[in-house]
Length: 465
Ligand code: BGP
Image (cartoon, rainbow, N blue to C red; front, side, top):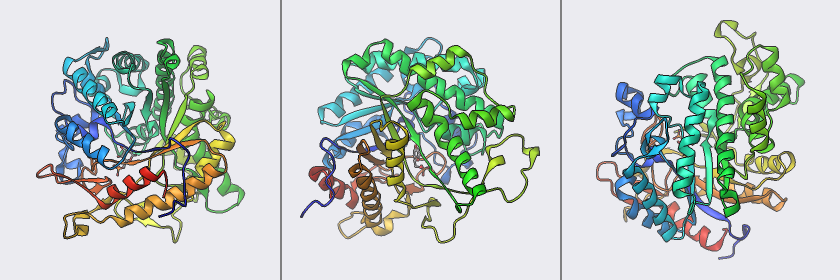
């Protein structure tokens, strides 16, 4: 078989998960906001399934990593749970079993020639820090996060070469502070903007710590994982285009620009100032943001955002919301993944690649998540007991073709990670939609490689398809 799309040498073929979505809550000393939310309101989760067992990675990591190896992945991202690693949240003192567990999994990945990419925050703030200080609304919590980061760097920085500070910080802003889909289910634009700023600062301060500790000189690199949802206006009309630019600035560039260039988008800052909702910042903090930019970028891409100018005047009784400046546009004829309700638009991979190349200094970057969640995959099981997920293979191929085009035109992309190696728990959808190369039977915890798992093995071996 010839390889039509051959990717750059040493390309990462891998997949991503997170601590809270794979490990299970076994032996944790603290509860995250999600653990707590499940404890007080299990109804909020599909089939009332919470993060208690997840995919049992805490207990079965050896077998799981062996399967990941078996499907040919050369790199994997997971995250360290703050609520597992840290015993004393104020000092950053680690917990013995947390240290043992993360040492074990990192060593196991390396032993299997799988590059571990370690993320620090994947929506899993310790709930105590929300109750005591207001979580990401508080600058004290930023400093506690840096202590957690420091402990993690110290413990694992000798072996882990690729670190990321946050996964999809915009989802914290949107889910927790604007659109109420994650606990604490607040809708408050002013708080949201402070949280947006504080997480940017937390990321920069963690990067600063990493550099001060000398890990950069040791071949270590540190980045951030952003969910980019590029905006496409309904038409080329000036009003639609303006709405789309705002949506891009707010939902994408408000993290992308500080991370890569050390500064917030000027146009956004102006609007927030004019509207009197700008964050509280100091010159010293802004300097930290300016001086501590990322080494590499991870992009989670699932869907674009379709935008139009506002149909009606904004209802000010909602307080300030980004929705003051745009409406989402329900584009007729768009392709949709019906299970997740997200648009499928592979062309966007190319647009992202070119945007990074032209507007973000062509920084080294990789696709850190891309995937298709499907409900009821049992119906695709063949007589050998294998899920034939051809739809997923097609989805990946289409996305990779557009990524390839961007790379051919010079975009500095060094890898492609899917979501996710092994079916894992999702934030409120629990195990409704499955994304993995490897299926999990929730009743027995038996894991079985899907057809896409066999496919990715070939792709990884041939460095393309
Ligand atoms: C991303 C998150 C992942 C994962 C994925 C799939 O936004 O970083 O944690 O959950 O989306 O989405 P979902 O689980 O909501 O279907």
